Length: 291
Image (cartoon, rainbow, N blue to C red):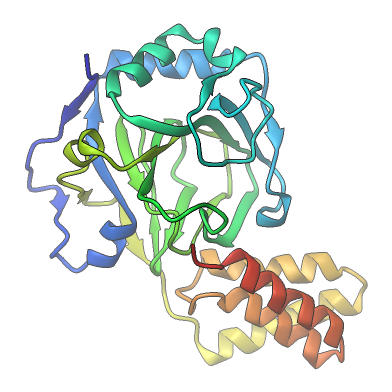
């Protein structure tokens, strides 16, 4: 039995034609969840015997942990996502309510995991699926524990993925995530192949009032001040702190795609660090590669 309930049309929803078409294309609510089911999923996730492993280190500041529930090997610590028919891991076998929920969705899963983002942590701007074969796939998020400072950045907007709903993310588009104050953000994330069951679930993507907010444009004066501050940190020997100061601009301003990486390259070029500038331009190309 499918445990999701279709959302009903309401004045608080923001349809795709209300000025947020690009945002809704990239992240949107699909369905509300029955609250007792959410409570069961949350309890099992919080009681999981492992925090998981740190994966995709180049994409993050630290503090991003994942544990696989359905994966290629049955090992919850196998966190590198790939195509194929997944196997239940030993962790999912210890989470019967979660297993029932996933089975009830009736979807064709590629991978399912628990993902934890600690306070003061960032997933830098990136795209996913670049290394996978060309086929229709989508990412579903079920927030289990979250807070207002835990937001997704995409299409020049901040989106808070609230608990109690099933969300769709298009991770082949540039995006990043931050949890600036905490507590931990804990999501159940499922990568699924597109089929009739998925299309039925995703037939009315939408946002509600308060889900998304536009980021401001960065002024020339703000850009100069940020580069100056980063340069001062670098002069004191805190190069990583200088770079992360500029990486975090992605979460505060509506930048062009890869704009934060360009700022870091500009910082190093201004200090005659051509090798470092080249390294960050290569990182930009890698992290933002299109599928």
